[in-house]
Length: 56
Image 1 (tube, rainbow, N blue to C red):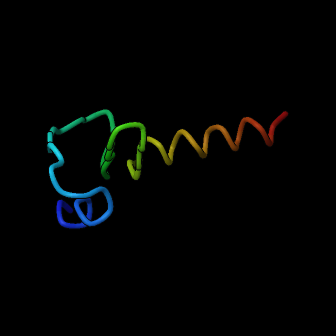
Image 2 (tube, rainbow, N blue to C red; image 1 turned 180 degrees about the vertical axis):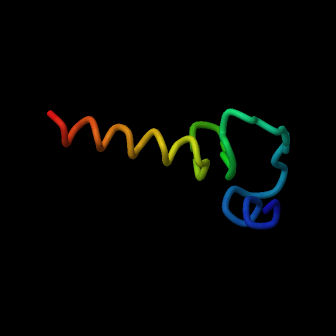
């Protein structure tokens, strides 16, 4: 993961790893304002938003 991030954003990144139970699984990466969210929580939220938009 760190090699891929360094290839995309350059060397000298600071890494902070933590377990966030609210994500329910997956990974969320933030580099500056760029956020990549592959968490189960974000997928559930997107499905809920889609369901709400279809029910209106």
